Image (cartoon, rainbow, N blue to C red; front, side):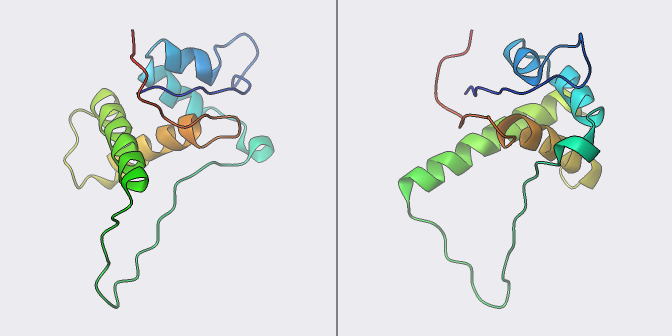
Amino acid sequence: MSATVSGPSSHEGEPSAAALLEAGDIVGLMRACHDRRLEREGIPMVLGFIDERREIPASTDAAQLAEGNAFADVFDRYTEALVPFARDEDEGAVITAMQVVAYTHFAPGAAPISEEASA
């Protein structure tokens, strides 16, 4: 899986998000997320709502399922790189991984995840 990310680095002279992602530096990417100037950039995030008043139908759309699986794989990879010690229900670990996924794959200029071979 890969994605194209553009945008400025957190500070002059530091690598951009795209460079960190391409280098596979997930921890560096997390640090860049934490060091952003959010008062000027805004905060990309993932938000989901669940209506639990009735049964939630499972999606049957192949493209939607494939996209969800791709993001789940990226999330798992980032979680393993950033917080390998965390329990599955550790909210802090989930928030850390979601922040990096949002910064990397949902920020303005980010391209969708694709099935390109990684080097």
